[in-house]
Length: 233
Image (cartoon, rainbow, N blue to C red; front, top):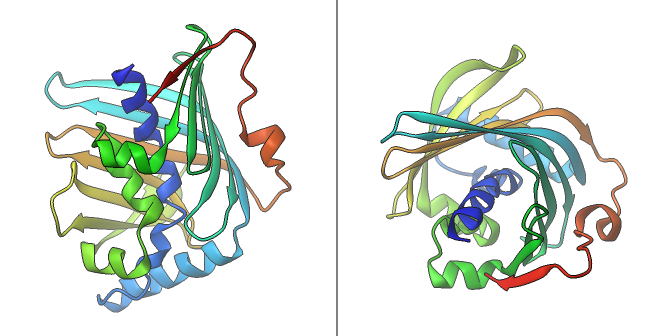
């Protein structure tokens, strides 16, 4: 269960992309402020998102990559609350939903669902739960806890031009760096989390569909089958 939870929580890196705009008032060079301001304006206008997702998990000790593909849906909630769903299709089917602060991870192959509260997972110090920081930090906390550095212009897969920013936590975390690639509209298309041991998880969004109507009950909440084994996370 631990490995399933770690994989799914790593995938929640997608969710923090919609909150990172809160550092828009950070003291930095003009280019950084311009990028973060665009992110801030984009977030204000973004009410929902459908996108394809690709994740590359790199194990630095074994020098091995693990690739995952799927899709995600997001609906803006109140304050720091998020409503999002992630459906992996390769290399195996796995589903993750977060509605407000309640998460469910479903693995059809095992007919098993892991459920819990994001706040509880963070309090327990569950591996990977540091990602939940981004779901509850205020603007002031983000400004105080992360240093932002501009690394230049780069194209992500598909030849899309972006600005590359590096965020370094000022206090100890389970990760040492967060890199984000932002397009001209202020949308974060790619993110990479670097753990303290050198492992990385890189997530790329594609085929974006913004501000379409998404029904949370029908499209975000996972409809679990009868007889599924429920496990408290």
